[in-house]
Image (cartoon, rainbow, N blue to C red; front, side):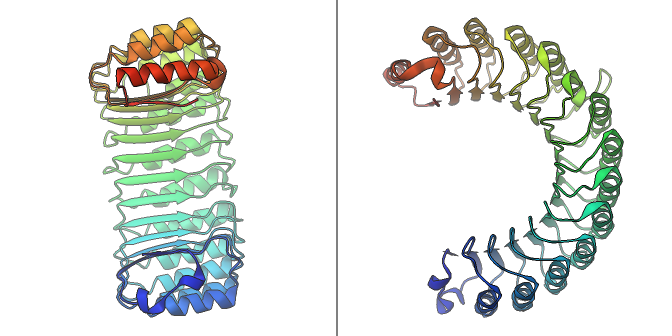
Length: 444
């Protein structure tokens, strides 16, 4: 049950619920109101799953103490989600929060979002130490982005995580905390001790991480022998093409990984992006799902072709999502890339975001004749707006070729409004309606 406004909270109604979703974002709740809310929630003795969203209010350490004290009385809780972004919580406040959460000994799933507060290194350390006392915890998601944690705080948090021996799923959001190479090395060293991890997501944007931190991160991740899902977000750091290549070589040896998401936007790594997926001798051989974002990296045609060559080594790949916006890609680059993908014979889902490049009308037509050779393709997404495509006929030709794929049941296409104009858009929609192709989503 979800209650979006405090005034509508009916204590009698929620007391009998075992699963509560309460949302009070952006209501300027103060500490006193937070205390009242906490008391109301603590009366729900039967609740086992609680989601409480209190972001962008006026909650300070006092309010945090009131609220967490009340929450600690919910002894039947097995799942807790707390969103507290954009409040006035300091290191002391997050420590108090962790201390009270640690009393919920039956918790197996915990999510705490405290982005954009006033949390320091000491508070982060103590919070981590308290959370590590939850011996039944198997799923943990913590977001500490845009605080003042620094190298020391994130290092100590990593040490605390090493004690969470039963974790199978971990997601960490620590962007904008200036942890540097030393911090990311210590953090991932701690994570490497969580040997039961099957899923790991790391958001490390804007943290002044260089090549040295990259390689240490990869070496630590390699220790997780049971990991099969991995997400790494390193946008806006200090990584060079060589750093990306080294990272790729190490991660490619994680043969247990089947699902990987890599985000490396705006790193100016150019053709080095092509080596993200390892070298000739070793690649992500068991991958079934790959999501790769390398927007604004000056990859060019040669870099994209090499990337396609490396992806083609993933023989079991079924799903591929690529964000290639703003990379100087022309017709030959995208065509060579598609040619390489033919070796991925099990590919059933393909999403290409190639906006803001230099693909022409002829390039789009030829792309259609190539894509329709993927016989198993059931899902196709193509965003190609802000290129050099201006003719209705080329867009129509691409759609006609794509619709020849017999297994296709979902097709999303964005050519851009400048390419079609109102008249062209209406003509395409009429054509698709006439053919009965409801599977096509045309985005203008």
